[in-house]
Length: 265
Ligand SMILES: Cc1cc2nc3c(=O)[nH]c(=O)nc-3n(C[C@H](O)[C@H](O)[C@H](O)COP(=O)(O)OP(=O)(O)OC[C@H]3O[C@@H](n4cnc5c(N)ncnc54)[C@H](O)[C@@H]3O)c2cc1C
Ligand code: FES
Image 1 (cartoon, helix red, strand yellow):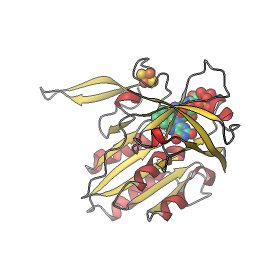
Image 2: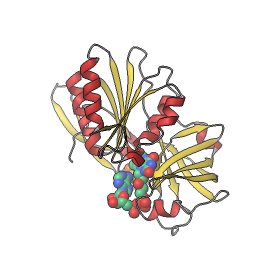
Image 3: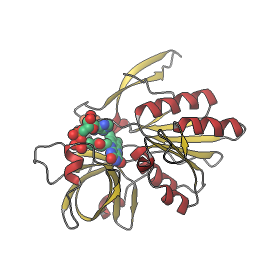
Image 4: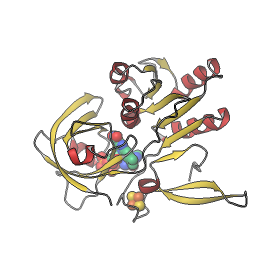
């Protein structure tokens, strides 16, 4: 059963570009947190009837839970006003998380914007160093690069406007890398905007690579009851044919294997 935890804010530092890093004293969450899981936060300074908001676990160590968030609306704007010592109720950790990267493959992480958050937690827990492909609209949307470099990961950066790294989509950098290393066995882990995830999925299928895709959906209950987060999926039946079904991103995901998501539904 998903647990509720009372926590205290340690800090809520601005990162620039509307992003902040929220550190929470939450030993109960940290104890069982796995990369790719998320927490559902009750934001204390919006009305009590407001829905909780979901955020990926960016790091979890020594009893401290880290969340990297972007201010996009009422809830996240209110979060920006929270101060050290304020209380936050946390539901979680929730979801399946990423599987452990295979020992026989090179892990490639593909991130768009704040999608880098769960991938950092994954990289920190990965015994094998790989490559982070990080993209964003502009330099301010490419986050945690120094964090990845500090733990020995190679990074490739792309921005839509060319203000940092190579101008263009992160998938173009991924294509170029793959064309130069097509003999290397890779495993891809991706989190970011839907268009990027669909493009990564398409490439993984084409290249015959295993890939894991973390979906971002608006959420209500986050316990599988409201069906507000459903995603159309495909699977192979025992007869060999294919059927589609609806998965709940909160309980069945947020991470799904490449080739199983029906995009655009
Ligand atoms: C599993 C999961 C992990 C997430 N991890 C992070 C994270 O690490 N950092 C982070 O900043 N955000 C993350 N999000 C998104 C975050 O939950 C939303 O940005 C937040 O709930 C918006 O709340 P709000 O009240 O500020 O915005 P609202 O006022 O509710 O909405 C403002 C705008 O954001 C859009 N929006 C709201 N929720 C989502 C969503 N889930 N996905 C895409 N667009 C949305 C709305 O359509 C609207 O255009 C995650 C979402 C999920 C489902
Ligand atoms: S958010 Fe309610 S079922 Fe997923």
